[in-house]
Length: 180
Image 1 (cartoon, rainbow, N blue to C red):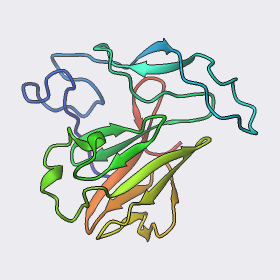
Image 2: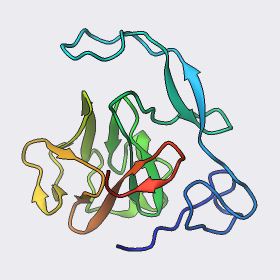
Image 3: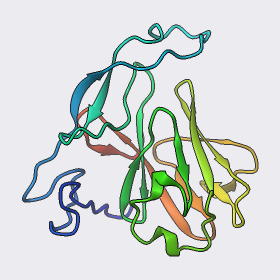
Image 4: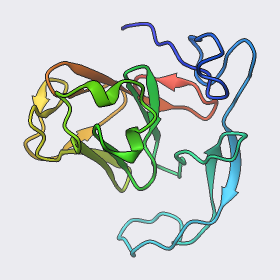
């Protein structure tokens, strides 16, 4: 597997890169637990916590909330063109014109990636990827996503012809794991 290099979230241009998630020699940024109230969800047949129950989310010290582990749902992140995108509870939209990808350096120049390329969404504890009628396709481990496909840590999501996006789980310590 290739070596992962991360940019400091505090000062991505001014700090050196690091092989450790969310840290650099200058800043030691760790994901910190915070309590937030979540909106009520539609009733489901599963036996999870009652809708509206507070849950732990992991939040950067600057207050920007990221994805939240519940009892069963892992925190999943994608490594796209040198940036780490955490899949939010409401999902993630991938593409050159998607707000979720606005901070990914250089993505707008990748014309093989459609403006609205793929959608990631949760169904209970399973993360799914659906192609959004992209020109060059969406693939999981080499299989084209003609219909939605499950996406798990250790998988490789491919956008278009050759933009490979490794899928990771972020553990409770903020460290990346490629497979559970």
